Amino acid sequence: MIACVTVEVAMVVSPVLRYKPQELHLFRFIRDPGSRKSKLYRDHYNEVVRKVSVSLPSCRIIEHFSIEITLESYVRADPRKMKTATNSVDDALFG
Image 1: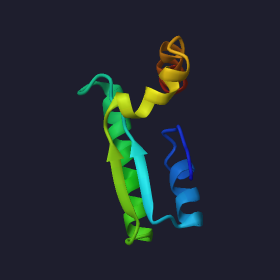
Image 2: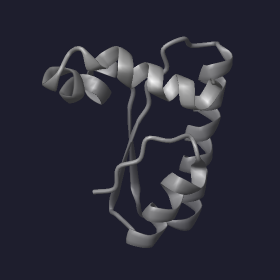
Image 3: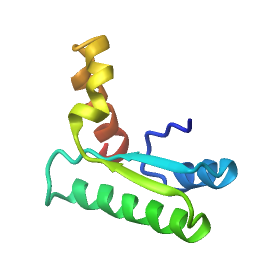
Image 4: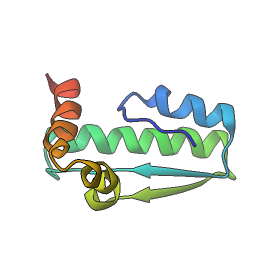
């Protein structure tokens, strides 16, 4: 399994190309569709899909949209961490 929480395309694509998985699961949660942040996330996702598809055409890419899927286990472990989890990503990207 390769796990990345980043909007740096190379940090997602490089391990995928190195290990050549049969499936790639991309978890994509966009809190505010149509916002500047959502465009950044969408552009990142599209670039990752493009690069992986070109280099590993046999790799099946599966997209997960739901916050329930992406953060469910994290929140279940400690619900107090939800705000920390989402704020940390926003802070890292947008200061």
